[in-house]
Length: 191
Image (tube, rainbow, N blue to C red; front, side, top):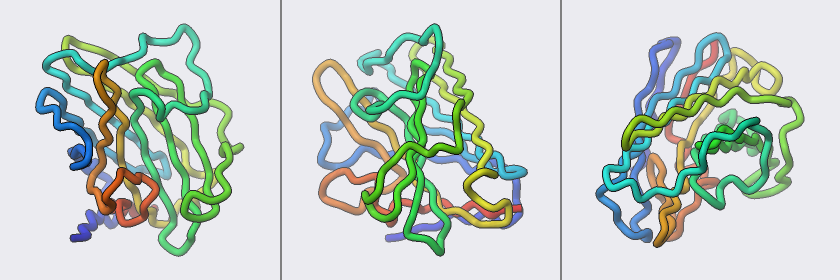
């Protein structure tokens, strides 16, 4: 079932809750939810990870956050987005340490490269007890026209001492695949 959450000119945040992929080990101690909002072409992402047993491996805050490759190999929050009329799309990776990256793809898993329009991405991370919050604002203006609606998929790779699990809004494939456009189920209007 494909569900589109559409916010035409409504600038209030869209709340989401991620689900673990059925092929990954269940871990009822972990919950991931958050909000996404697009206002004046600023995309605001807010992730909240609750880990009641403190099993998730989380990197400590970095002294200096930087653009880093391979963040998805450890605990990482992700956002994929695309204009509906284009095969190309972008991937944002956010680390609990504050590191980040944005990649551009020409088509499904094709032509991956760092998006050169961004030299810095402010990521705020805060841990309180068993809750971790990661927040980021991305000005889409260099890559997406302000009036262009975007389709969004939200996901996370979670690493514990014993396994990895893969979380998303929805899962359409037998194996975790965050690049699958069927998972880009939130539509955010431009303005």
